[in-house]
Picture 1 (cartoon, rainbow, N blue to C red):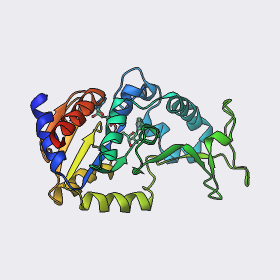
Picture 2 (picture 1 turned 180 degrees about the horizontal axis):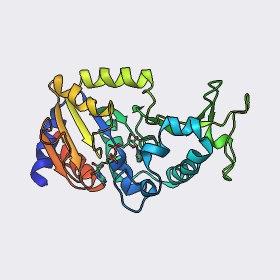
Picture 3 (picture 1 turned 90 degrees about the horizontal axis):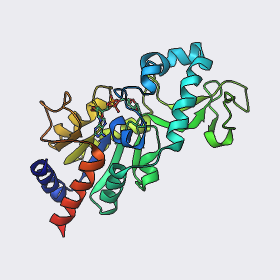
Length: 249
Ligand code: NAD
């Protein structure tokens, strides 16, 4: 691992436009399960059913059962050392932006400023009928399904469900960032959920170096990844940042 961290640190210390793409894996050490964690939320609720827009339209009450558990978890969770390491890289002027597939707000809580929420944020509520938006904190945390104050429709969390399109501004901004990057850190994502999974390929087309950090290999590893750092991000990312600091002095 030390050798791969050293190689990645060299790339990062010389980069002019480093970006990061993060996935559920970076928040596992904060107690939020990814789609693979056993015994977690997603064993109880099949994401292809409970996180699909058709299910929400058909039976919002059923989907809210899962949302209450998910939001409860994200509200309790605190950023871990991997989130903090990325915030530090941004403060050092090296990391230009994070594109996150996560909806848990933990990058912002760790102090990262330029965060593109590719799949939205679970702490925002939207009305599918009249487009009104609310903060989840405006509603009591007592298990009552929140309804729109203007039209009484059941509200939907501001996350992108399966079957929904990515918000246009997030899509455009991510394309622009990937197209101008010279290095990309891909952390804790299985890179199978499209179109987020395409971002590392767009960066690579721009000749960016791809540094992947994961517990296991993904479809990117044998194809476009230049440096694969194996291990949990809460350990490997802080080590990487220390190494970058040592190089840039
Ligand atoms: P995924 O669940 O498909 O894959 C997670 C990846 O992270 C896996 O490759 C796994 O090996 C790796 N991983 C797990 N723990 C790790 C650790 N400690 N350090 C490094 N890597 C680790 O997640 P995905 O690719 O993000 O796609 C799933 C979708 O589900 C995303 O769209 C995301 O929006 C959503 N989701 C979000 C959250 C969240 O907001 N925290 C949680 C679950 C799912």
